[in-house]
Image 1 (cartoon, helix red, strand yellow):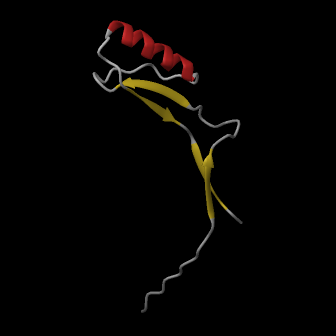
Image 2 (cartoon, rainbow, N blue to C red; image 1 turned 180 degrees about the vertical axis):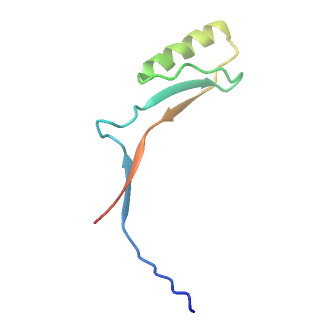
Image 3 (cartoon, rainbow, N blue to C red; image 1 turned 90 degrees about the vertical axis):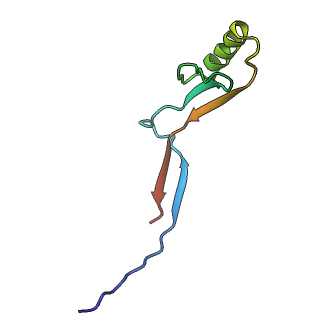
Length: 78
C-alpha cells in the first residue's frame, strides 16, 4: 500500500464582509492608563464621547486605543 498526496492550489480572496447579514462593525475606546473601556457601539462617536468624559474624570489619563471588531469573509474563486 502506498500513500498518495494531492495538492491543489486555489485562489482565495479576503475582504470585509458587507453582506446584509454580516455582523456589525463595533468600536470600543480603551484607556491605556487604567484599562477601562467604553461600551461597544456601531457608532464610533460614542467611544469618542466616552474618552472626553473619562479625561474629565481622570485628567492624567491621556492615551487611548481604539479597538475595532470588523467582520471579514473569505471566498474561493471558481
